Image (tube, rainbow, N blue to C red; front, side):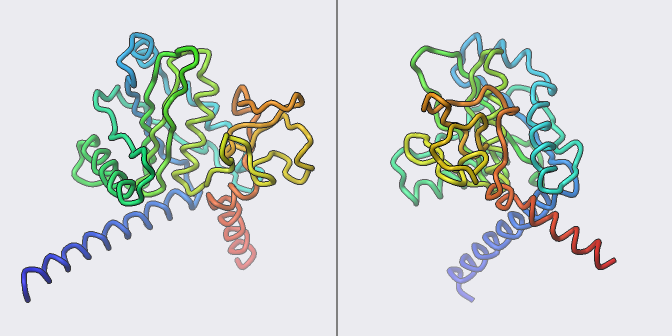
Length: 268
């Protein structure tokens, strides 16, 4: 056997192993048989004093409303899991994750995805990957008038979220909307908004059975925004004003998981 063939076989073996681990991770977290294991790693995104102060003051309880949201919304589809997630808050990381490409290149995006997963593995200081653990890297930035944060993201492969958040206690509840949004991305949920941030009708609207022109008081979590009575596109104040729509529930396997458990119970 030539050296070239050996290299190809090794590469195929590595790809098969990665695909197998990805499948195993998704099977674990999307079964909804146990609380989601979520690790939050804070990062000073702009090396600012406000971000440093926010990180020092962080507590696990700051993310309780994400758990409350998941409990409430998955229960609507028949999943009774309490707590819905268990958060581990790690010390601040001094390393920033690699930035995604800005030109939309498919090859560059694929390379960046692998680079990010390798970076996350190196941060863990463990020999084996943390299978089934959702890793959320939250980069805090000092608020500045007129300055929008970089786009946050969540990867299903590797269960990785990179969240850009405001270092302001008044923003904690809206930060948690973004964190919950990216967390659901890691479980397979897709965005429900179009260019400009406008929710896609009907799947991006709360009470999707209502006509599109009617204002909403709640936002679909994967749209992240709602159109209010004044016709403005706004972000809700907290997760209490967010819902998980039927399509999102299907994507993260809430409804499917419930139907399978219900069917097996009936057979018994």
